[in-house]
Length: 74
Image 1: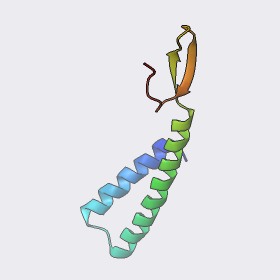
Image 2 (image 1 turned 135 degrees about the vertical axis):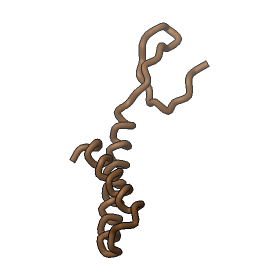
Image 3 (image 1 turned 180 degrees about the vertical axis):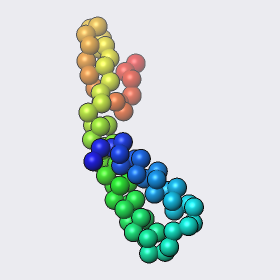
Image 4 (image 1 turned 90 degrees about the vertical axis):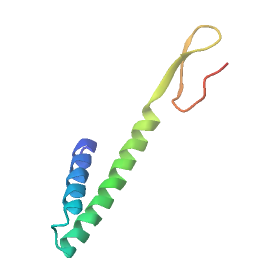
């Protein structure tokens, strides 16, 4: 499953649960599915975050990469 498909399914589950037209048993199953999808999406986002890096220039003018959440050097 892709991140996009999981997110789309999560949105669908949320719409259905918010409608209030679903029996309790089915709501619980959908809730459990949604929780698994949230966990899946969080894992994918964490993986992507680890891969994203910031391209900056060091003091010598050379390009270097560093983690995205590193504060800029002054």
